[in-house]
Amino acid sequence: MSSKKVGNAVYRNRARRKLRALVLEKENQLQDGKYIFVAKNALLDREHKVLQKDFTYAIKKLGLFE
Image 1 (cartoon, rainbow, N blue to C red):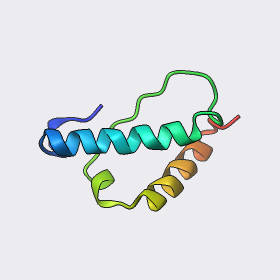
Image 2: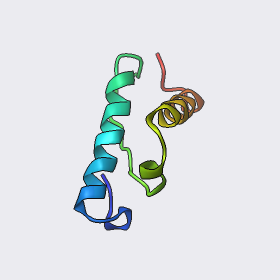
Image 3: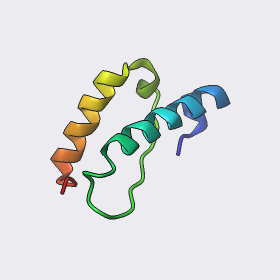
Image 4: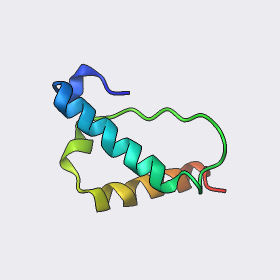
């Protein structure tokens, strides 16, 4: 999900694709359940490697790894 605060449709779709890629990379390690991820403006400015690190840190902090 991404709101119009993220930008026009092109930027919102890019943010969604980045989030989807992060989740798909870690989907086998996540606990079963339903998750909601919200795209923010900062997502568009970060490189994929940094996003991977941040995503992994957040998921570990929440205790969602199996």
